[in-house]
Length: 357
Image 1 (cartoon, helix red, strand yellow):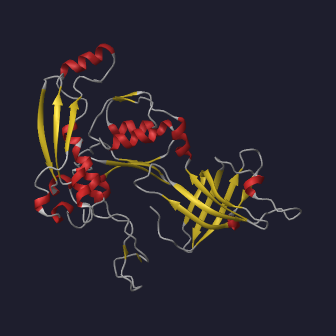
Image 2 (cartoon, rainbow, N blue to C red):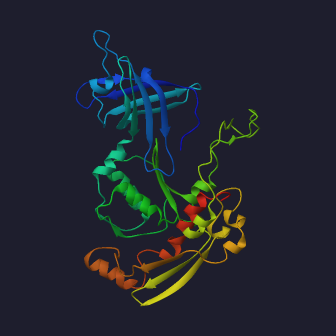
Image 3 (tube, rainbow, N blue to C red):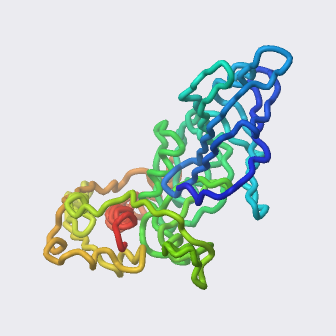
């Protein structure tokens, strides 16, 4: 999610060559720079528009794009400073060129776009999750992040446990997959559903409960008057709504009411549970509880049917004989508490993007 557009000075924008061609500071050639981080993105990104008029005055102008050259993976150290002295900087870790696009060559200048990503974004393509994991989901995520040398900002501990084998999945995919199975411990909340994302301070694996209940860092208001009321830090200059309310789609997804069938192969039995959109189970994600704003006639019956097979007897803790003994102590317990941690995250994620959630 992009932040507000404010006057700023690009104090440093140094791209280092991968071919021993030194480094070039393009801070004076940047006509536009955008930086993005979002709770819905596994990695941070940035983009820049370069207007390159050449830097070698002793002969024909040379484009940095070809002189370094820039072909992808070049480390870029960036410092952006606003009028209040606040700095956005990437110098110890840096960002890396991911893509060069939309080049517009000319005789006097060359215009092109550079897309950047964090180093972990590329490490994610080089690593696979192959080990066997057992225990708390939050511990799994921490171990996976460290496997790609990622810096951790905050991980909310989970009460939910899950044993699994990586099966050569990519780290980001695995952490996002685990987020949908995670339930926070009692000191954080009780509702399932986590988010896995990266900021400039590191990776986060956060409970939706903890994010909704935390105190705001800044408060902004949109009022078209130019006057900032007491209690707010600044005005919102423009608003664009990217999400629409689609009742039919929400019903198809089972946002308000769904039915799940759970089958236990060990006992050859099944049971059916209905989940209805209730504030006490999901909590609020805004000023009002979204489920209460929809006409009752459309929420009284389940609109999505789901099924799940309990993985009883799979992946018990330990190895060898210890694993067998652990299974004997609780032979009927599933590896994953699907009844309490499967459907609720689905409804919780849909709730986040429903108006008045």
